[in-house]
Length: 456
Image (tube, rainbow, N blue to C red):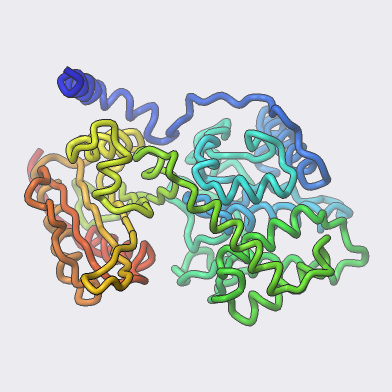
């Protein structure tokens, strides 16, 4: 009866999918309402962040969005991305506060409010920084009072941190600055500063620029210790307590530590302790169901294709630290294969994705008891958003061939691949470093080269 009931619900959902998607795919979880915090944050950083958010919304209401700069990281919303955005927004405002025309800047977290706690390490770091409960000090995607496509044309511009290019919905906004520790994708050639540098944490780049400019001011503005400690937390978790840090990460971390309330601590000891606490928090995911695991680190955007009939498709990636077998057994209601794909389909319908890729990773032991790190790639292609069934078949085949042909990955089909449905596939591989940064370019290149014209 329960399975029949689920089938009926899924059928009803499919029948109304187009109407639901029109409302939800651009603004997932937009039905959630903001509420007053149960506990208001203490300290200058929390007070500034809350008042800054209030002023932004007041100016939007009075049609003064053009006075504002939005500082934004990637849509995965990890601690590095969030801290980089908050740090640079704080610096832009405070470094110009004595100017004739001070800058108005606010950090935008490109995740819904209720998704922030899906990263327990973020919650811990924010709690340590004495921010308000419920993340009410922060401006999140679902709190934007206007659609990004139209707001992008109204605002003064955007600053990108921990991300090399803006999402499609922000591409009408001028790119004023970029800070990133990934590959330069060529966006924002006129941006100043425009910093691309290989370091463990993007926060290191933002903090360096902030301190360099701060120390050149006639009079330094107040730097709250809560923000300095948030910066150290982001660098710590991204560098494994400085274990994988570059010389630049270490140098910046020491400069920040010297200004913080932890100035008497040894840098290595403090960063190791921070990293351990944050890493332990990051692993605390056992209470999350599959839908939350799919969306906690979701990153996606529109990808251009050569096809005049289908010029763009929506592609999204999730990262999950559990095996497919464990997710099915412990993260779905019925503990069965069909349920994993039903939940995945409900999520991608909500965000309007044509192609989704779940990247799973887990540890196991071989026959000799030696630990092995295994990764899985789960590919699904939908037909109800932009492409019909024939096109979806062709696109699925194109992406599948690209993944299976990659000589570095050397993927193998999952042990239950024969049970999968149409346009579904799962592969395993043992390339420990082949996470999203490796897989995403392979999939994107295949989509960008895909060109099949099938009459609708």
